[in-house]
Image 1 (cartoon, helix red, strand yellow):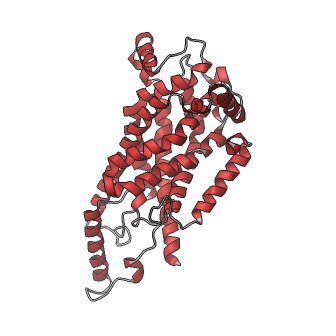
Image 2: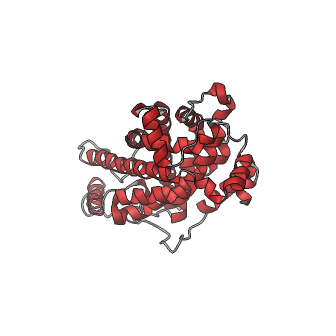
Image 3: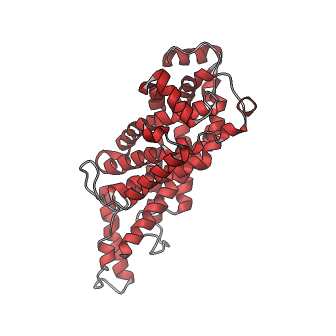
Amino acid sequence: PIMLLSSPSSLVCILFSITLLLLNSNGAICGCSPTFPHGQLRYPLTTSHTSTHRSSHSHYHRHIRGGASASPSPSTTATASLSVTERLAFGGVSRATAQILLYPIDALRTLAQTRDHRTLADVGAKALIRGCTTTSSFALFIGAIQFGIFGATKQYCGPVVASALGAAGSCIVSVPQEVIKQRLVTGVYASFRQAVKTIYAQEGLLGFYSAWRPTMARNIPFVIATFTANDVLKQKVLKARDSSDNADASDSSSNELSVKQNLLIGVSSALIGAIITHPADVVKTRLMTQAASKALPYTSTMDCIQTIWKTEGVAAFYSGFVQRSAYMGPLWSIQFALNGVLCKSFEERKNKK
């Protein structure tokens, strides 16, 4: 409550300080092992494939360095991996950065999905950045939870289940963020502080979780589709690179992707998820922002779905799709690419010590 009711600059400073603490921490969280296998967060190959890859990679380097008698260097066989807290921090920073950069596009998506189809002429141009820093700071925790849970569980339960767990866990933070953000964009409240105080006073703590059902119905399938598609596309790229006879020795050294590859795969993955989950996104927006409309309020999620179907038709469930695609594609591509860059550079820094 102290963090939520503080000034925007104080909130951002507090969250940034937490991130710095995480970056400098090497301890475990919730009893988990402090470290995971090298590169796990960036969606590695399966265990058997990874072992084969590492074995062939070691043989390859012995060959090019002067024959089978040459032994790999210590840095080749024992590399420092990132701690849990470092992985959480990098996932959170990646998500928050991407969300801040693309906030105006997401604001346009929200307006296009409202019941009365509001435009900038109705709410003013300032709506494009209203609540940008404060609500985007929530993304530090959203990204940390998503990437952290996915990276920690994928090796044991596969990408689909790990994606679902990450999506469900992140809803603890993402639902309040969406409620506050969308009401700020549509002009229900003038500031972040007013939004928090009013929602809590009039609706209580549960008010921050209004429309949580359609949000979960959107988030879980979307994250499953996005993370799974990202994982599948990445493995295809890695396998194609490994099978190339002209692959450079440095390129075949690990399961790393270039920034360009991460961006392209991120966009493709997010678009797949957006197509599948957009109707749920429209329902979620309608329920969260109906206070901005003069129309008779929806009584439930099902009432919202039935009303849209009867009065506006099927096409209404894809209102704002262009704006959301323009937002989600770059959001996830930047998030995946930046997370990969941060993890790789930090691992290299640790290995040099």
